[in-house]
Amino acid sequence: MPTGVRMSYGTAAWLAISLAAWMANAALHLEFSNWIVASYNTPFGLFVPRDHTLTIATLVSLFMATIIARQWWHGVKPVLSISAWCLIFTIMISSMKLITTTNVEMIHFLQYGLLTCLLAQAFDAKRENWPLLPLMFLVIFLGILDELNQYFYLTPNNSSYIDFNDFVLNQIGACAGLLAWYGFRQAPATRPVWGMLHTVILGAYILLLLAVLALCLTGYLRYTPKGTVPPGGIDIINGNPVIFFQREPGLLSSSIPTFTSGEYYVMGALEGFFVMLAITSLLAVYVKLSQMPSR
Image 1 (cartoon, rainbow, N blue to C red):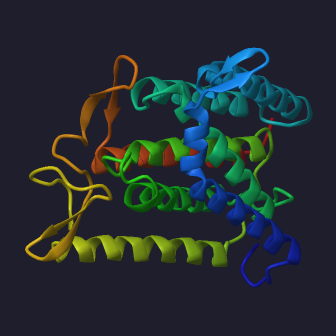
Image 2 (image 1 turned 180 degrees about the vertical axis):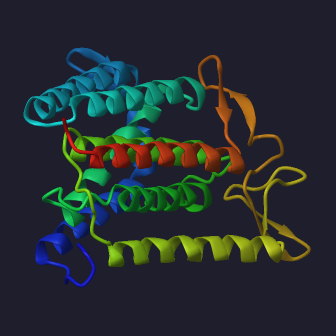
């Protein structure tokens, strides 16, 4: 919705649907996790959803391949979009190998890819304005709120640190959603200024940054504790509550054994920031290249 234009009923409705889907995903995270790992007796034998992640991933991949093929047939800029999809899939596979515990983590891609498509439908249903970066920043912010909710409230016993890995996974999913929405299309040479969307997103990030800085400067937020912190990441020190990024020393910026075999790397705050900045830069390059006239 460009500057100076009131929000339409369609935009408001799709925005409400998007936020409802995000809140349901955030609220039901624990129930979904329990469902994934539970065992169910069926007429065909014991069924454990977690054991079928490869099958589900294959079906989703085939569905995405169908969408990509259809876009390729009817769209423009095939080399750019196919290259972008290859890069997205490479990043997905690499992240699954390096920064996740199990294949179940790939659900982040699907959840935040769909959320991005819903928000794109709300703000740019005709695909005319191309607010890719604002939409990505909005989805990242919602992903951050989701992960903080898990760490502090929803799953405090299972969360040992603020999960910057999941921040990155959510962003990768957002990029895939944007590519599914805008791929194989010609971007407008001059995109409208998205005043309201930019203002809301910028304001949200400024408030978050100011809150983090204020808590750090006052000592109420610290990166690592000296010992073990109770579930929820909050400990009482000298009579005051102190929030910690990790519940015990040495978790962030280290390799940790997975639940099954092998190890995965837990990114720290700076590492997570720079990886997300790199992905953002790649998206900015894609938008720039999409603005160039098709040959």
